[in-house]
Amino acid sequence: MNSIKTYQLQYILLAILLIFFFLLNISLGSVKIPLRDILNILMGHSIEKESWQYIIVNYRLPKAFTAILVGGGLSLSGVLMQTLFRNPLAGPFVLGISSGASLGVALLIMGSSLFVGTFASFLVSGFSIAMAATIGSFLVLLSIIVVAHRIKDTMALLIIGLMFGSITTAVVSVLSYFTSKESLQQYIFWSFGSLGNLSWTQLALLSGLFLLGVFITIAVLKPLNAFLLGENYARSMGIQLKKSRFLIILAASILAGGITAFAGPIAFIGLAVPHLTRQLFKSQNHHVLVPATILFGAILMLICDTISQLPTSEYSLPINAITSIVGAPVVIWLLVRKRKMVF
Image 1 (cartoon, one colour):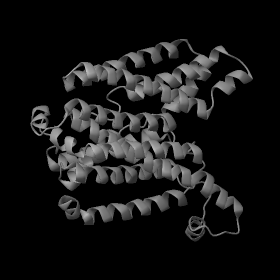
Image 2 (tube, one colour; image 1 turned 180 degrees about the horizontal axis):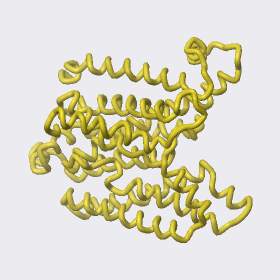
Image 3 (spheres, one colour; image 1 turned 30 degrees about the vertical axis):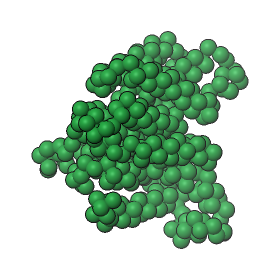
Image 4 (tube, rainbow, N blue to C red; image 1 turned 45 degrees about the vertical axis):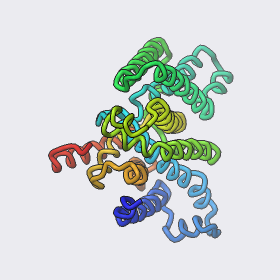
């Protein structure tokens, strides 16, 4: 707790930045809405133009909250994977969870091309795509958990996870080769990622998965700190390795799988934000890193989403491209400036 108090000022600053970029995000778009009216809507007051209230409540607010959950959840998942495998290149999708979700969506979209007419359009909907991604990621998660109980070497588990990812990617490639161009285009659009397609009901489901992942992470904060010095040290501290490893994998998979199901595969955030947080906070203590990483990831995702909207334009860029274009140079600059990676 003393470590957390030491960083109180940084937490307050991150919270202020989060509120600022949240308001900025919902104030920009193809329709210009004055900040005063936005604040009135947020406080539950009525405004003259009902269309503005509809835009804020049914589109911009869900998208902004989705950005917060996606950024925070992927960043937290990245921290868990990097600590478990003690590998700075590990990310939330290193175990093949995202590939499993992609395979589920590919089977749905490209398989539906076998059907024609209304039945095909019924098969492929926003809800069915989310369900297919959830099932795909869940099946990969079950496979990883079964393997985790059979092997003791964490690095072997990492390699197996990469192999699962390679297998699912290969199957998607075969499906892409034989499918129609319309189905292939629809799958590619899904792979770009999107924050603006969630209803309040879907957002509630995503929030539940996010909170579940956070609660599991809180339960393994002590083992996470012990894993930093290796499994032998963790064992000497009385940590139950199998149980802790299972909970860490479960938390990371719930976060990564749930986010991929509802928002598509979002690159960069889960890999880079943990490193940026370590650089800024100069701490390896997960009691400090976990809340800081969630806040930082949410802020960065809001910034990327704001940029992708092309303010004053009716067009928006793929969020997957923006996260890498905006974030990668920042990481390169920080690493060059610091001359080494803190891990």
